[in-house]
Length: 230
Image 1: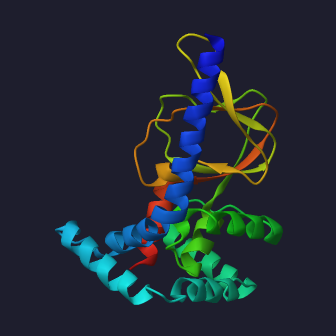
Image 2: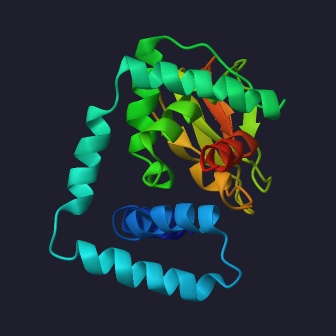
């Protein structure tokens, strides 16, 4: 019976990884910029808007390297002046939104966060300016050993990027104790989908040792996207 459960778990985990890979490589490059356009335009009837956007945008990009060229252009824009201008603009945004906080970071910390966020699909449609604003708004959180960050079944609204430490994601089984599904180490992230959707967590995420994370809340993310689009 234990062998059957282990085999079923491995199949389930493999299917989850394959589904995640498909979403990241095939669906997310389309979905992320489309969501950005929907947020900016706010059409009364989103379905025709979405269909027209897909026809126009991906009709132009077929058999071209437009996406790659845009990525190269964004990469060239990452410099100190861009970061300083974004930080100044975030000050202006924070004056209108008292819940938006500024958190000082070193250039090395910003560079690591920038590299990580650029690898996540939800930020693939953001501009250079927006990404810098997001990085500057991320707050530092230091956990205690064994601190629980996310409880299975709860609804979180934050993205976490690990700077240091060691965290575990586990799932409670009905017939046996919690099973560890994944380790989260420095450079890893989790929770990006909760910036857009109300999703109940399938896992409990806990810090094994004292850990430092950078946190982006849904409220901060939406405030920046909304204000920078004005």
